[in-house]
Image 1 (spheres, rainbow, N blue to C red):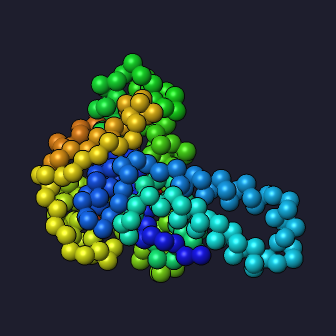
Image 2 (image 1 turned 120 degrees about the vertical axis):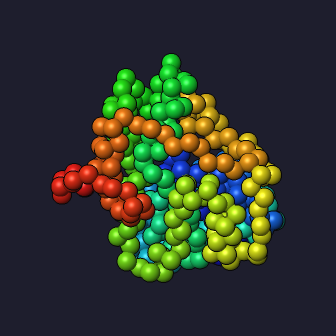
Image 3 (image 1 turned 180 degrees about the vertical axis):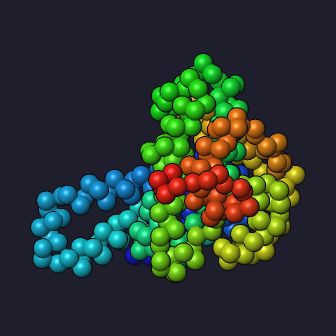
Length: 286
């Protein structure tokens, strides 16, 4: 079984423009997007995890590994085909931070996959979160992190398993992929570049995706209702606007700014090489 649609997988860090990216992709007449984060990644992960321990499947593997493996591949592709059956457009967008964890598996499921990974200066990510938190201070964060100081929020959000730290770790691990066929299907887009020059940025992305030429009007964009912000307790809003505009840079306390540059040194070297980094040692750079 083959996939019936071309799928654009959109992923990346929180507050880094993935909602805007989906909005801009959806301006193209060949592209379909619902406007919501997708449960498809989770459905595939749970199916794979659950069936891998099924005793009847394991018995079949002992007799015909290759055929059963092909059957599993067809089942996953069938799920994906059914998920996008509602549209006749040939290209669909599926947004989930989870796709960052499934790059190598996607190369098997969808050999022609394309993934757009949205990134942003970590200081601006924290600044954006802090600004919204100031507006909703009486509400705790979705994962009930200690919200009593900016340093505590930094530790929780950017630490192992944190809302920012977990996808950032996945992006770091993606740098270890040596297969050039996979690496060539990943497109990293910085939020700063996207909002500063959306017309040129999208012209490049449309071309990279192999779509027909299409010029967006960043002052008259079609909008959609995105994710339910109450689910995130209004700490991470997802509204779309008709106009693409850059926001003023967020200012962080000096100590927090330095801590982020030290903690995320590898990330700055990879995506923001002009940022001056404080002295780091091997332990701090892990």
